[in-house]
Image 1 (cartoon, rainbow, N blue to C red):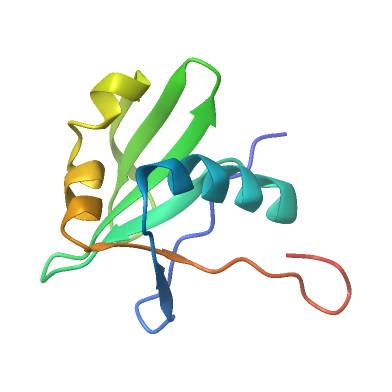
Image 2 (image 1 turned 45 degrees about the vertical axis):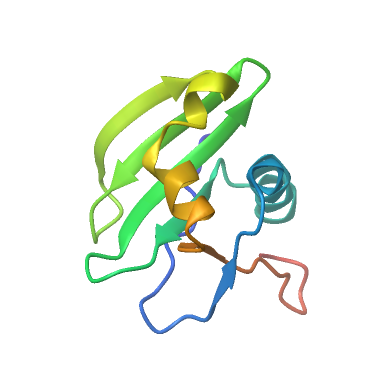
Length: 109
């Protein structure tokens, strides 16, 4: 079964992403905790651009999402080309964020 990563709500507190290597960890963490594929990342700014990132051994699948969580664009990127993507550029400027993942008391995400 395929699940979509949870879409961050505008009022939700977001955590800053500090390093490029953290993206792989954060995606895997979200997939393990929630059972859903990928993780949503937000580029801070007036437009509040939202991307869903999926990790796989050959690189990343990056999906640009609209405000409803629908996919506007999808790209498969090798780790070397991911560094040129807008997400990596936002990270370098301190503008990349993600929502925290946690389990509810009943054990569901």
